[in-house]
Length: 255
Image (tube, rainbow, N blue to C red):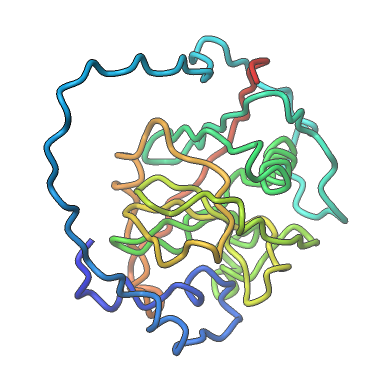
């Protein structure tokens, strides 16, 4: 990502907040231009490499679809019911109008955010919502139920599920690459709801501020095809918001 593009970088707190919240520009400026460092070059010792530990990630064939909790979109709740089993591995397939994106959910590192996402998905909450804020070189944001209604366009970015919950921003996961799944929120750490975003480039200036709860494992190229409809300072006139048609949850019995 080009560090000289202020429109893509001056945004850490404000752009992932709901649209009604004012940005803290002083804090953003301090965080949005990370120093560039060049790793020192070393000559590795000529030793026999150790055998890597066996992976515990289940194969794609080990995953099966989770049955939805409702047969039509449900948009309002008092809270998210507990629906995940922490001993299992979950994935989500985001079916967009530009193609499918598969993410592995970080159940152990962010159990509350993952449970919330799975609960809403199983109630078809995200069906028909749109990627209402896609910023080139930064991220694609979706998950606002208001974005399913074109008549509510002036309010897109301000909606939620009817409740909020606290960020798990100290779980050690980082926005260190493209394809990181994070929870959007307002100024308060207790304001997470339904909106989420996926990075299209590293965004380490967000580390420790927003909850990371998953990672793209297939379909990053689909995110690159989404319409860039926000400049970083607001919507770009004439640019559409691509639809998130539906989301499917997959589960594996492996730990």
